[in-house]
Image 1 (cartoon, rainbow, N blue to C red):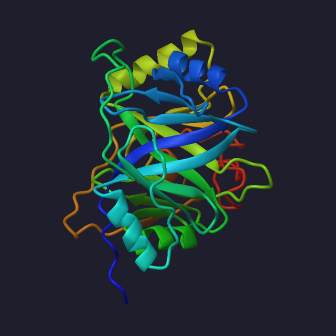
Image 2 (spheres, rainbow, N blue to C red; image 1 turned 60 degrees about the horizontal axis):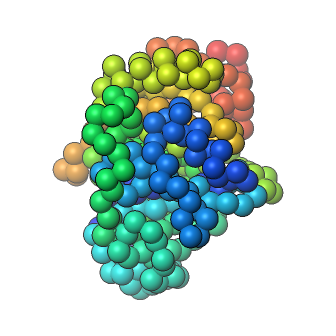
Image 3 (tube, rainbow, N blue to C red; image 1 turned 90 degrees about the vertical axis):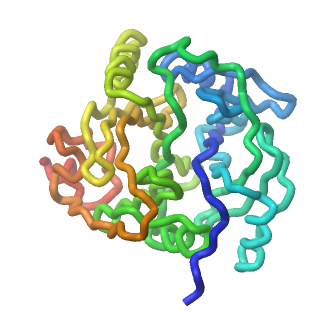
Length: 302
């Protein structure tokens, strides 16, 4: 068996969405999530920041809503691209990526475009402390998948992610740093023209900031679709709401940490047990997991 490659994975760098109205969507993220809109670049892409990095969200003009790409930071994008090529994955070299010094791109087995970026440039648009509940980072992305197991094999065996946990065969959590997950695949096949995004999570550093976000959403008449609650596998507090395009946002605090000491054993959680999804017992609305399967507790009336 071939050794798992070390591409130098560090973190989820940014998520790139597609929108028919990038300006309106960017304004929604400023008002309800606390990101800072850096404006539209010459390429028409709006980039939004939240911390010391150049940006964490891109909004591309197009027939949205949709997913343009996912970017993960690595130590050396060119070296990572060469390793992918050696492993049989065709990577496009020297991709132009604003906010980084180097980037390569490739498609995963289900056609999602992945970028590996390096040399993240600093950003100074976000003043420290100007919004106490601003997210500290984009924490993870959930991606709809035809075959979560096959996607997990590709990202672990070929890209170097590590398996954290499963919920049945329907949800798989992958990590590339001590955070329990930065990438999630959900068994929710998409039809023609549907977005690959299941949810995008933004993390804050305290439960007090988590609560302030709920107050902020209420002040902007944004409905919390599910939560506050706490997931069993990752132990993080959560609440979900939709952005102006209908993309699902997760607000996260206190995600479980997994030291990379080789001793962690992934667990398979039972999807038929309500406390798998929320240890506090409040289940999601029926549409949240409606395509996961018959064992999904909301569909079972739990």
